[in-house]
Image (cartoon, rainbow, N blue to C red; front, side, top):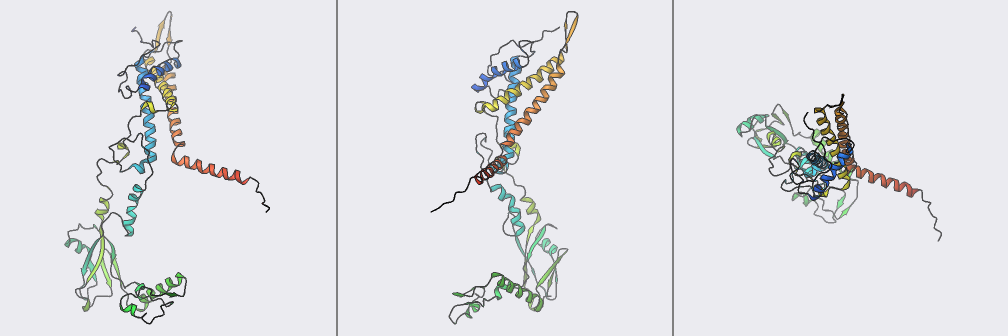
Amino acid sequence: MANIPIWPGSSSFTPGDTPRGLYDTDTDFQTDADKVSNFCARRLGYPLVDIELQDLNFYTAFEEAVTTYGNELYAYKIREDYLSLEGAPTSSTLNNSLATPSLGPIIRLSEQYGTEAGVGGNVDYRTGSFVLTSSVQDYDFEEFALANGIEQGDMEIRKVFYEASPAIERFYDPFAGTGYGFVGLMDSFGFGGFSPAVQFLMMPLSFDMGRMQQIEMADQVRRSNYTFQIRNNKLKIFPIPKSGDEGSKLFFEYILKSSRLATSTSPSPGNITNVSNVPYTNPVYTQINSVGRQWIFEYTLALSKEMLGYVRGKYSTIPIPDSNVTLNQSDLIAAATSEKNALIEKLRGYFDETSRKSLLERKSQEGDFKQQELNKVPMTIFIG
């Protein structure tokens, strides 16, 4: 039977002993590598039993444990800060950067609402027009699109400028006065929508709003109604154009649906566009505190236990005089799997408890508790 290599009882780490060499030049990592090897060997039963592992196995587990800790840490940071990080440059690492919440990405996300409301956004509004023809009531947007090189079905009409003048132009404030005799001249110079008053009889604004609505309703009921209908990309206008309208233009605003889709994605080389290119790197072991290092030691032990289980699975039985000894492969692998999962869940729970949301909730609860305590303090009566 081949000789099974066992733990000799001590180790001496040298840069290059780990598979990837991610932390080999870190002085704290070099010091702890031998400490963690000794720790794991003793936790696995040395020197009472032989440990079928070498120092390189412990170093490999140690390196993987540090990397796993960093992955969990920075995955949490990405979840916590991604909305503020998206669009930032990828040229510098974020390991030691403080991410301050920013409204920039939220504003970028909300631009779509400005587009739909017609008050901003990132989609261009375009203007078109139909030349009115006497007695012709229907006009086709598809014909306009074809004549202007717009793909069929790409137009979306946002507004048609076929309406009466707003009520405010015909609204005059009867509760205001100047003390002069030229109030009537305001309408002559186009300032009918402005109040020239230096004296006011104050009335609720709801009264003015009611009067404006009354004017608009009177226009719709008592006067010729300016309106339109859009059905199946056909514009029908009311009233029917007459000979005096011949050659006039009816304007409208529209956007291209393709423009709305085009603004939903934009090339952004060199910037953060998804969680895979957020510039976090492997952690610096020296900067990990004792809480993190204890977790790394325990996770290294779980990995070492798993490796030992697989090794003992190859040598499942060892012959001894008049019998065989069965090794505990299945117990080691089961325990290692359980411990690894428990450590990961413990670490994620710790990160969640220190998230911005959890800390703010705790701060709010502390404020409530302090207020409740203060409410129990007797109120003194001051006698002057």
